[in-house]
Length: 314
Image (cartoon, rainbow, N blue to C red; front, side, top):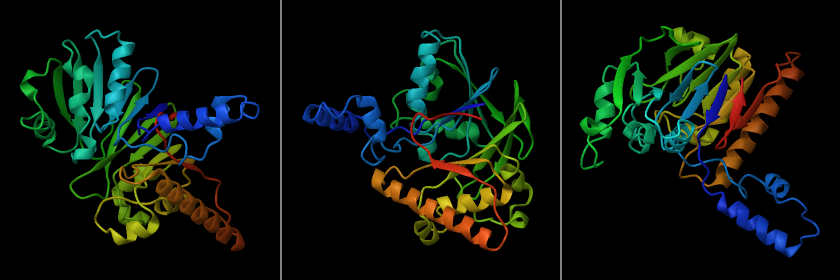
């Protein structure tokens, strides 16, 4: 499975400007602008990202989109280029919930304005159609839902029941978030990834997770909410978001192979997100050391904080 994360950067222009200034200052020392830019710290370079949630999961036969945050605008442009603008595409969009940050990109998703395209929305919530329709409503948006040129369809998913999308099995599981929010487990070719966003992960133990424990088990990749630092998460109970250390604990216990931390706070500067990543690394290393001291070594876990444009082969 290929995973495309659309968590757009706050600004790439500052990277280019900084690189060019340094290049003009000392051409002899900087032979390759590209290598120089890659060497910059994340908070100085392109950053982590500022758009709200949208990812694409693809296999040889299926392409699925999760959520319609502001990142979906760029994905829509990509899809249009691939189709040469023709209205013959079929798009499948899985919705986790209907807070504005997960809907805000839909009115700017170009394929929905092209006659001949088929847009399929999926969600566990029975009010799926009402919430999508409300997004295209005056005075918030000038084009009413009834006037959208594409053919739009709605499908209700059953909780914790798998559904096949060509060669991908998708199963929704409930997350810990104000208003019903559902994560998704994707399985294909013996590989599995889970989208666990937005979640506060208040149910930490296996017993408390109950039937939703399966979302986190036997994963090659877990995409996990890390909007806050650990201290912020402890101060913002019932806000529906977690932190890196919480995801580390779940991943180590369930032997997840890799974790990608997402849903960075759009209002946070890159330096703050970089500090949250540093704190997560410190927590991870101390957890490994403590386990080793007890003679209970933990499995090696790969993890990182996501950035815009990442493409991961699972």
